[in-house]
Length: 222
Image (tube, rainbow, N blue to C red; front, top):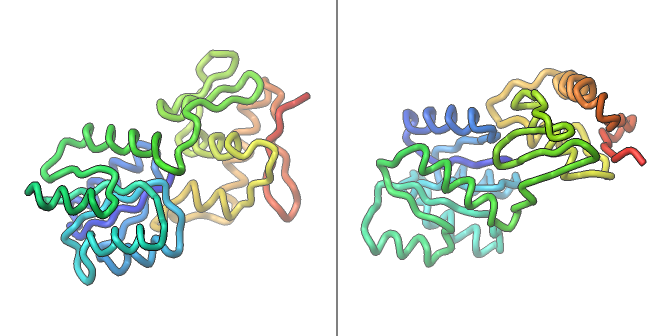
């Protein structure tokens, strides 16, 4: 899952980036409305967390531009503007949720989960292949209903492959979904995680095939 955080307060942004990363989200951060608009034009997101008081272009203008371009990505407004007229304006322009500052982090995380579940890019919360099952919301994997120990990156990788069962996923697609802008990605990072996941899935006899020059393919054994 990839999130765009548009927030001009660097202290708050740093705290949110750490919390979202720990929760398993690849998160990009921008600090102005113009940069938020550019990021939305260049990338696909599962959710946007949008401050209204952004420099260069305010959050409502960014939101209006998104909806005018028929971009229906879920938008959570996170702002200090707490009047009824502010909330009505944001929701009328197409925001999916509105949370005022100060806020409690567990509530923000719960709202994020809810929006991703019901958003236009929402997907099943349980994915499976043979004896492997992934609880997407709980970020837990099971083999024959026994817990399967996977790192955060391995869980994300498994989710991407399960969502694309029978289709080749390129290395570029994996990098886009596994890492945010600020992450340093070594040349062989994806190969390392693929190798680790393969080893852990061996008892389930679910191969991850390397399609030379194209990417990786997961198919359920027949």
